[in-house]
Amino acid sequence: MSSETTKLFPRHVAVLLLVLIGCAFAGNHISARLAFDHGTGLLAAIVSRSGVSLLALAALVLWQRQPVRLPPGAWRWQLAVGLLIATQSLCLYSAVARIPVALALLVSNTMPILLALLTWALGGARPTKRACVLMAVILAGLVLALDVPARLASAEEISSEWLAGVAFAACASVVFAMALWITDHKLKSLRGSVRSLMTLGIVFSTMLLAGWSGLVPGGMAWPRDSLGWTGLVLLVLLYGTAFTVMFVTLPRLDMARNAAVMNSEPIATLLFGWLVLDQILSPMQIVGGLVVVGGIVLLTLRKTG
Image 1 (cartoon, rainbow, N blue to C red):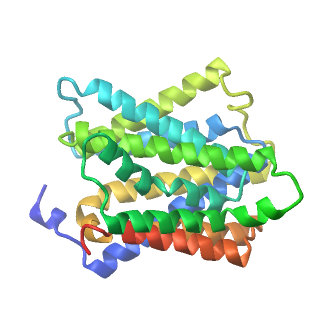
Image 2: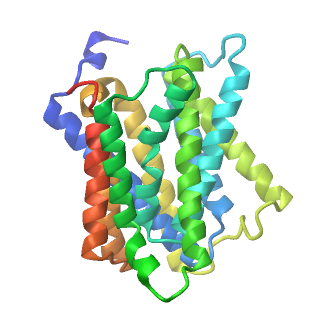
């Protein structure tokens, strides 16, 4: 790869690209909810999304003539990452199908807290006092975003769908943190292209197998009307485009400085959810969401502050 190819983008270009990628991922989740509301099964959505992305990434890897092989001992860790990402995808879409999309994203985006705690528990660095304060702030913001005080004060019983949606989003956060820990500690020497290709392949085959086995009732159902097909097509296109653009441009995005920009995704999801799905959060929930996003930005910038 030439030095020209690996030259970093100017920061304003990198930030703009990351915002657009975040918006595309947000649009993918909004499109998923539209597809689910019109009969699309969870597994059908994940199989379609991962299958198209797998083909695009495989074509890119072949075009770049990159060797696709794993070092000895890496297979079990790569398999674990693939299964964890498959679980994360299923849990996150399960949450998106049940609660407002922005809330599902906010809960799942608490992953940096879990990753920091997991790293500490497995012998890594202990979180600093600043990090602990930020974690507490993020959790407090999440309580407001989920409107927990109002729900507890209400005489109405909290719906099982809402509880299940929050639980699925939290599970997505947990397994994603585990996948990132394995990637950073067991697969760090593996080329990103090989790791991404293998992960997508495992996600695709696992979800396809789950669909054939009938493990998730109605999981492989296809849309029942044109709106459902529109949602499915858009989620595939938006996810595939965002994933591919991020993969191609990643070496030039200076993620050490700019990774926090990706937290624009839940904010974009909040806006798109209102515009497309008419999902409106209360002012207090919006404040809580902004606290969560702001805390995560500060937490992920802790090494550069």
